[in-house]
Length: 367
Image (cartoon, rainbow, N blue to C red; front, top):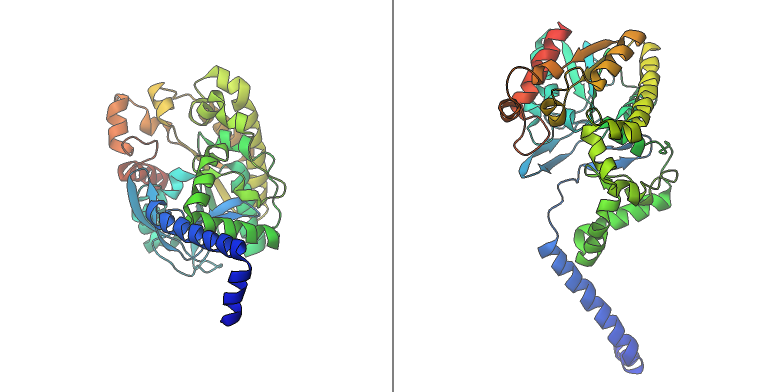
């Protein structure tokens, strides 16, 4: 104790600097407790093989827009009705659904999602329904994740149902340079340290938050803080480009967008879907493609859409199933009526009634 006092007396400037540093860290932490908003994405994680996914066996609270809702994942890191151990070998038939935020079911309870409703409906028939969908997936990640589940995890299933979203074309361009690999120990440590710091220290959170728009599209960090050695993220100028921003929802109804970005994204999607279908055919797994419109296609009455034509032709050429949901959302009713009935207010995603419409249509197809 006496030695410590002598050190402080001999080094008053260092002692003052040290004391100031400790004070600032404590103050920064206190400000963080008060000012950093709650993290409603604690169950989400980067992945070295398929870019991002969900952590296994999570009990969390998710938030989408103004809606908060419980989020549970099973042992495979799939959204589920509760944490549970999923056997790799099914007891009967097994349907695996994969898609993006629509099929993950943002903003609604799991029991209200397409997968949740189909699971409840077919349980008595001995058919298990699993949901591998995650926000901002697209054909490249559908392929990489399915291959990982089959080859690395050893998951068995009989039928793969792929919900291809309008926004997948934008995401295909975003993921074009991503290559599956492994996280280095140093990269994982840096990522975990950064995640801890931005959740607890206000200054760190502020710096991170300022750069989010240059890294994210649809809430997904395309750089993952340097975890991916072959994928440093998107060009900020491309993200800021108004055409690229609109691409996610309007490429089927805007010729300029289609010519500039959409055609390329569609070609990438088709190539990755070919790989996915080939992978499944090698294992005698049935494949079905499902397509559905966004509001922009509904307003434009884009019933005979490029999205429908492309994937209908693809399905015929590759001898896989095809479900076209465009007529379910584009009919004689005016757009505001359809939107109010099937979509979350102020959002592009389905409400429970929209999920039920899709689940009922898919159930009829499966029969």
